[in-house]
Image (cartoon, rainbow, N blue to C red; front, side, top):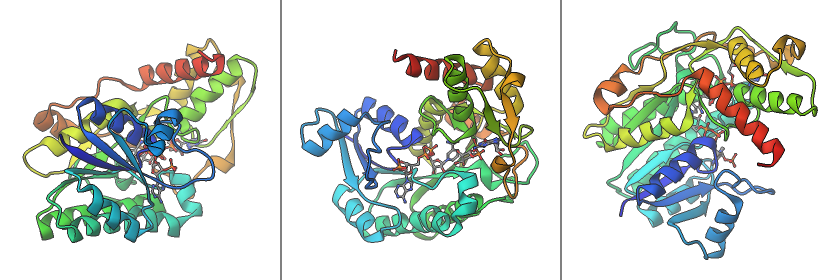
Length: 329
Ligand code: NAP
Ligand code: GDD
């Protein structure tokens, strides 16, 4: 039985990856940071409580830790001795990173080094996945691929470029099977509520049932390549099963503006977005990434991976899920 360690297991991707690996028969260990309220909702609070109580019936194990706590990371890595490590934990919100640049650098950049060092100190022969991002391309025009120039536009983007190069450095310096997955935006009903797609789908559902009338957004002209998160965690796993450690872009290859996503989401609920959306300066960023559209042909050719769900379907999936959530179904 293979053993995997996931940082960021309570996040969107971590929770889908845990589901995927458990279904494949893995023993799954996750690092959870201590919070004063529950942060295990995406894993299922009851299921997480059962893990903590020792009454769990599946192969999920949770450990308290933090990417800013190198000693805890070293202890967990040495105790678990995983075959595969997926480093998904991050301060992942681009706009928030402008408010917290030092924390973002420490968590996303320093945290990756702490984890890589923990693996090296434990002399582990494991495979390592780093959650890199299309935000690293920043100002470089689309289509962006594995060899495109990095020009990050936020503290988040710069921290991820550092972590990306650390991953490559540990591969070259210590022969670690370390892979960087450069993933374009991927969303789902489990997406955090302050990312634009979920903010929109949630608002549409609330407007439809009369709980809200207005939605304030920032830049409606930004172009993103939005895919469906469960498909992307499958891609992460495929990268670690490949015989060679090499980096991959995962993307749909289709660009959609925020305005188009808004229009599709409101249309799906029978609403006219022009009656409800207003632009608010508060959601504009000091430096914007205007257009991200990925070229994932390497992942298709080498791993057989191809995105199936594009932005229109994604908007409808997310609106339906938020409506169902409000209706309690
Ligand atoms: P997410 O939903 O924001 O999840 C982030 C996870 O990191 C959560 O489990 C969070 O814990 C954890 N975390 C945050 N700070 C931490 C710390 N100091 N120590 C330990 N854990 C910490 O993000 P996601 O969308 O699943 O993305 C997963 C990874 O892929 C991130 O690294 C992100 O930057 C990267 N990425 C995401 C996308 C995308 O479109 N989703 C695209 C490219 C790359 P809490 O639950 O306690 O907050
Ligand atoms: N969050 C947010 N809120 N974004 C808005 C809003 C708003 O009210 N209005 C417009 N936008 C625009 C942003 O300016 C950006 O151009 C776009 O919508 C997408 O914003 P987010 O959903 O916050 O995602 P992101 O692209 O900045 O970052 C996400 O994708 C990256 C991969 O490219 C995050 O998941 C990152 O962690 C990830 O690396």
